[in-house]
Length: 182
Image: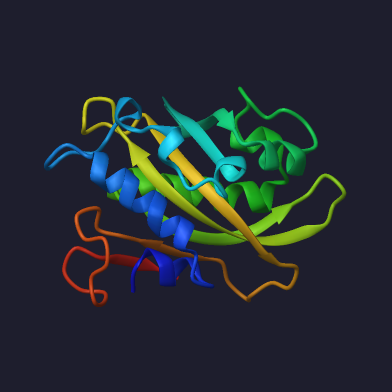
């Protein structure tokens, strides 16, 4: 399974963003924000990009929105910049996003995850998200770059999380260096 198939529906933009992230990584290290150029992102994903700052606290990491694409701002019904994930949405959905982002920190690897997204009008939509860790020093993750696509209004029974080995863009299957939690 690769990033494109994990994202579902042939999400080539996810694969392109992953390739951009991976191609900017210094050998054996994670890329940092200084290595990433939004002008090189797939154009269809730019409005759906959310960049989180990682703030480590005694209760675990929190994720503050640094930059949000225009589509995400419209979905939120307000400017989410500067707010934490747990401040902008309902608890069950926000907790799933926080859990997925924490997994990215724990594994220091990209992930594709799916979970519901509650809109301001209380409508729920299903979203798939790509999360890419960024580390200014190449090791300690201080940001997570995410992109999402909205899929449909009907919900699968369980959200899913797939974490990828950052050094293998399209391995043939889940083997050494791969982690999956469904």
